[in-house]
Amino acid sequence: MTGQHPHHVPAPGEPSVPELEIDETVAPRPEEEAADLARAVPDTADHSHD
Image 1 (tube, rainbow, N blue to C red):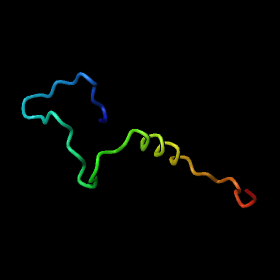
Image 2: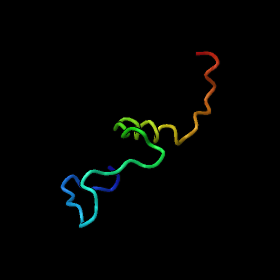
Image 3: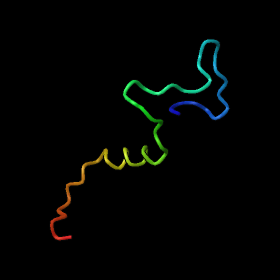
Image 4: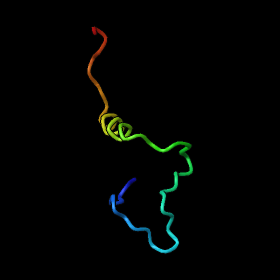
């Protein structure tokens, strides 16, 4: 839930359950946000010798 407080009370006409974005078929898992943040900075290190 982006930008919603845990005690959010929907306004008239607002759905009580957040709707999925058009390109989403399943709700995002909490760890996906952490992974997105980790991918925001490119990993340019040389991993060829690992």
